[in-house]
Every structure is written in structure tokens, then in C-alpha cells.
Length: 143
Image 1 (cartoon, rainbow, N blue to C red):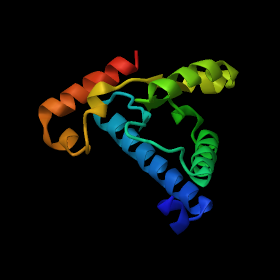
Image 2 (image 1 turned 90 degrees about the vertical axis):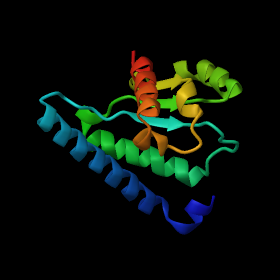
Image 3 (image 1 turned 30 degrees about the vertical axis):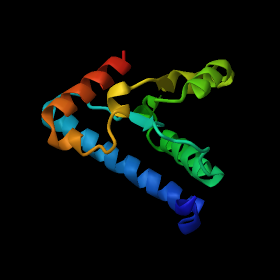
Image 4 (image 1 turned 135 degrees about the vertical axis):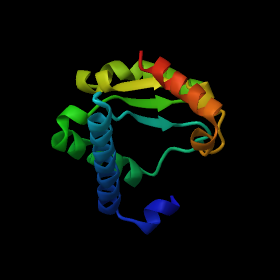
């Protein structure tokens, strides 16, 4: 892909770890401010994806996740893979039992129609109703 021709796997790993560090700092600050423990949930919306990701991108994602787990074991929360096409959803259902238990417990493959309905995520910050619908959907997915 275009991204992977511009950056190395190592650079992308560093970027993913940086983003996760920022998430950790924000979650900690919100926890201190509210007096409630805040957590980070990682969600990957697959809506509209038509091709398998570049192998180098997958390597960077896997490497950063492994490093993040070592650096922040308490913060390694759930990862949701959202809006997979039906065929992939069925395939994942067949192979998920082959994943290690620790991976199975953290991965959730779900449908998120509210999120799939957005072309861009801007309405989540500008439209109260869109934000409320989205947050209700996320809360439902976490049950």
C-alpha cells in the first residue's frame, strides 16, 4: 500500500506505540479527574475494506500489540474487529477456536451498524445524537 512504501515497519510500530501511550495518558488523566477507572478499547472498523492489508502493516500491528502487552499488561484490554463482511465473519468463526485462549478473550468480532453508517467520524464530535448513538452501540458491544 501507499503508506507502507513511505514508512518502514519499525517506524509504524513506533507510531502505533506512541498512539497507545497517548491513549494511556488520556485514560489515566480521565481516571484521576473523574475518580472512575477509565480504560482504552481498541476497535477496528472493517467497513468498506476490500483488500487484505499489506503484510508489512500486519507485521507492524502485531509487533506493536506484543510490545504494548509487555509494557502495559494491565491496559491490554479488548480489541473489537467491527463490520467484517459475512464471509470473513464465518471464516473467523471457524478459526477463532485455534487462537490461544488469551487472544480469544481479548478479541471480539461484532457488527456495529451505527459506526458502519458513518462515512467520516466527524459527526461523533459535532453531533450530540450521533455521539449518543455511537456510545450506546459501543456499550452494547462490550456486554
